[in-house]
Length: 542
Image (cartoon, rainbow, N blue to C red; front, top):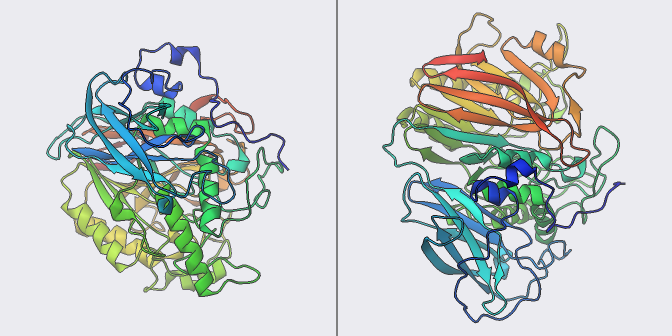
């Protein structure tokens, strides 16, 4: 059982006075958005809602040179078991506005949208016509009579498509198990003031309370409701996570580009193959579960209508450009994969993982990725994806064993990608990854068994926000992992995220770590920093 209760979503963690003392702007948003009283929208005369409908905060995502997606989801009672958030069974009009300043004195766009019950009362506003490379403030409002106003968020458009050079601060994160710790890493990520955030999967976890216990043996807080299976279950779970003030702070400070992994549906699912259960679900039952999970995921993320699911299918792999500095190729390695080899037993070393026809991403997505990287004029080709790409031997000593749920379970697919990068002359590929709850940094080679094989790219793996509990820098298998995997340059088991600072000459990756997550408000530091020079594949420790 947990030893703390669910926090009030309207009560943010304390923010250092040095942060709150900053001029009004991005820091003010992190500190709780106290500048919301000026420049209110005019009354629309819509029916009243009793209470605060903005308990889940605001978010933005999918930045382009002239636009962005603005998101909110209305919920008077975010923890309602029926997943309806205490909202009426009718559409509610939501007003939105965008300003060039955080006091909303220079409004540039405004409009109205309907929050409909069939989409969980979520709103996805797809803006166009904004200026490239520009920061904007935004907010929402419902009910003109009582002036129910959302917190303000900050967002940013991408640079113009032909823009060369410039700088980009991009943070990436994954794996936030609500029960395993406090979301302080999200708060610290927000304080980094990134230009954009990439989230690489496991945004929620599907388990009922205490079904997945932290290695410490004690979860610090509990999931609400049963294991997520129905749409109501997934809506409630997303709302419980979204009500967390630290997660809200991270969403409010910058646009996000998101993809999923397995726990947004069920642990280690593969396409329409469920994880082993008792009783094992029918295909029809698991298809319905996946459809419910995908629906709730869309409702709760700042995604475009192009990503709205169709039954149990959702188009999530996509590409976004940051001028000609970086292309983000966002993958989906869950929806199209073959079942894991060896019955998904960890570790595995059997021949099934090397079968030529096995795929992690499907033929269409594989071609899309290689063609897109080859055709991109950007300096950096950033592949945002879920599971570890580099070969990684988990068994100490001469024996070998691999994770069948990662690219090591689909070695032919990985080899085709690596060969395609070389044969098509793709420059500066950087694979960024989540899933494994550890910080890793590795060179990528075409032949990892050949110690003399030259790098063709790099992989940066972020640890978890909370999954795995406090962790620690010294852990049982670190030394053997580094010894048995010569391309591996870093192995760390603390919680945190990665901040990259990118320009035309180099990519600098700073691996941030927290002291712990079992208590809120932990400090953050840098465990290691690596640099990749443009035109020179391979990691250099700074």
